[in-house]
Image (cartoon, rainbow, N blue to C red):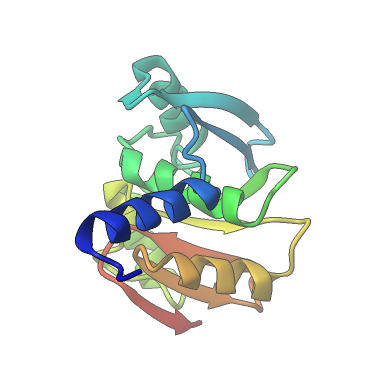
Amino acid sequence: MPLDRRRFLAWGAGLALARPALAQPQERRLLLHNLHTEETLDVVYWVQGRYIDSALADLNHLLRDHRSGEVGPMAPALFDLLHDLARSLEARGPIEIVSAYRAPATNEWLAQNTSGVARASLHTRGMAADIRLPERSLAELHQAALALGAGGVGLYEASGFVHVDIGRVRHWVG
């Protein structure tokens, strides 16, 4: 029996129903631990297509500049990136935050007094985080971040973290 257009479409629909789709969560949760302040936050920040303002404020506070205490507005897309990364690695424990928001003055001081700090760092715009996940090696975390293809990814083995950001797609080893 020839496979006409109607049968082909019905066949394709049957295949689509037979294959389990990747379930998209109805909520997005983050479990984060700030290594400098020793604060941990477990928060649902997105439900059914909407960000929760109070949860975003809690995340901004947790990811503040630990040197100055300044709280900056973090980009919700960065939270989505961290969520996707934790989900892809099936993380059970918290993502450890080495650095997230940096006040411009802090970033300028770091750029002048240390190596590897960009003067126009995405940290100052709330678009980057330096992280680690104790249950995974840095190499695994790095590879998972690269696989997402969602922004910049830097591996800093000597310092013990992976940089992720929501800027243009690029990668490096620091």
